[in-house]
Image: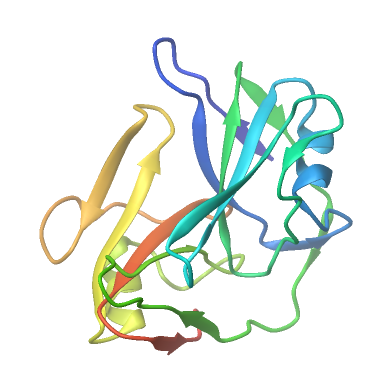
Length: 176
């Protein structure tokens, strides 16, 4: 169950991941499942270093992208919303290809597995390895970013929350 937050004066962005194998297969499925408060769902295409979005207008506008295990998403809501998904835990955790594109920051949006052993930003940064520069989260309560690169806020990681990891080179990573 997610508490999707729309703080007054802010955008209503929430970073999520889907740690369960559900019937939700694409962006439109998420928008439909969340309901009328869902405005936009976005993913970050690391290869292009650009966001891709699906807007809740009419039958939907934008890219109705396929949801991927281990990927993080930005879900924007127009009002506080409680959203429950139903599914089963994944049996395995696949390796994730974290992409660095020359001239970019190497951003990748990720999600940790259900009941991950990575309990905080430092654990995640260390797990990714020597190519990891930064781990970032969007705090849904404050709508402000928290960063960890060995300094900053060593925030706790949470089931169902999405994160941004920046890498300095292409890296294959298997989260635990």
